[in-house]
Amino acid sequence: MPDIPDGETVEVQGSAAKPYVLTNVGGVYSCSCPAWRNQSTAIEKRTCKHLRKYRGEKEEEERLGGELPTRAVKSSSDVKGPPMLLAHAWDNTQDLSGWWISEKLDGVRAYWDGSRFLSRQGNEFMAPNWFVDGLPLTPLDGELWLDRKAFQKTISIVRRQDRSEHWKQIRYIVFDAPAEKSVFEERIEFLKDHFATRQQPYTRLLDHTLCRNVSHLRRELQRVESLGGEGLMLRQPGSRYEIGRSASLLKVKTFHDAEATVIGHQNGRGKHKGRLGALVVRLADGTEFSVGTGFTDKQREQPPAVGSVVTFRYQEFTDAGVPRFPSFVREDAAVNSSSNADPAARRAEWKPSSGSKAGRATKTSSKKKMAPAADVPTAGAAASSDDANRRYFEFSDGKSHKFWEISVDGNAVTVRYGRIGSKGTTNRKDFADAEAARKHQTKLIDEKTSKGYAEV
Image 1 (cartoon, rainbow, N blue to C red):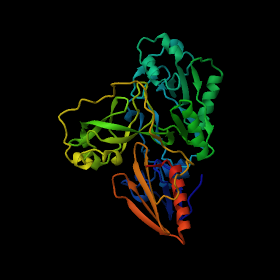
Image 2 (cartoon, rainbow, N blue to C red):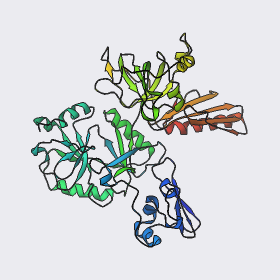
Image 3 (tube, helix red, strand yellow):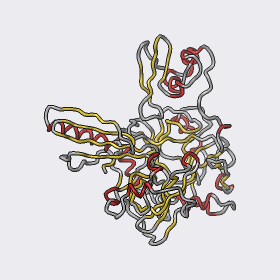
Image 4 (cartoon, rainbow, N blue to C red):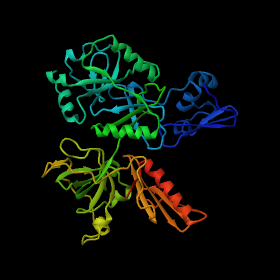
């Protein structure tokens, strides 16, 4: 296993956007991750999964002079339902070259425990005996799947309690063997060997291909989504099966932007008690639904007024024409400023209501689905109007909502960035002439759009 020379550092990628830093100072090893920092033991007795992975379990055990501390991961007793490996979302910056790509299936996650299928919550799926005949006694991780864009129909079949003939439409797509204590590549070989010698008409293995670079990843994502697929999953090479969320498994999806009109407010609960919980909005075709994520604290205290137009981000439409996983992006000030009332004044007048009529998505008029107002650009998206003085971009992945702004004034380039709703941080850089400044602006814009930032 590799080691860190005394006085030097190495970077390793973890679950955060930026890599963690491993350091060796006189034989005392440290890591910049929270798990290492928050331990109560002496610093020379600390370790973490990043040090274990980089140096090796045996090396870390010898360094600490005994058994390693218990890993800071969930055990099966901590988890409601089967012990599953769960994914993080890709941050659009981490280099995934050499990772294993597979399609993210729009089905129902199912854990085969050797005798029955279990949901993530531990509920049993009543599969007929002929459907499970030939499956191994060892656990499998996979997806009950019918077809692309058939999630609702899949749910209606696998949740039935009568072990019906409808299951003949379903296939169990296997992508891992949780009980095998080996690396991912060896677990896949185990599955291939098992199913090569057994006939199981309702089960197949999920295909995996190596990711060559970010461009390859973007092309594959576009190909899968053009076929109606949900997105991609990427697995770290040489990774082991962990319980709970792990940075060794990432999901990659494209999100779209659209506009809707605010028709009501839902009261917040828990930490949002006394302020906005969700906006109730309506699409142009009459579809009503709620948007409960993506807001800053200030926006929850002074939310967009009823009647204002907002932009939200979503993954896709359900069969009923309702956006899936909607997330608030911004209030469209240019549209709202044309109304008679001042939007800021109307926001200040909002108070928590005694109740809300809209907690679910409804359809009040046409069944025609709404086309997205604008897609989030992928890597290599062309920048428009390179001579523009000021350009403003935003990025949202459901967890973080950031802005990035760049302007050119003569031979100076000013960049402002931060969390949406905040003033952000401003940096200025001077160049020899205006042409060099514009070239730098174009370069930075290309970098940001390749990471998923969309111009507003």
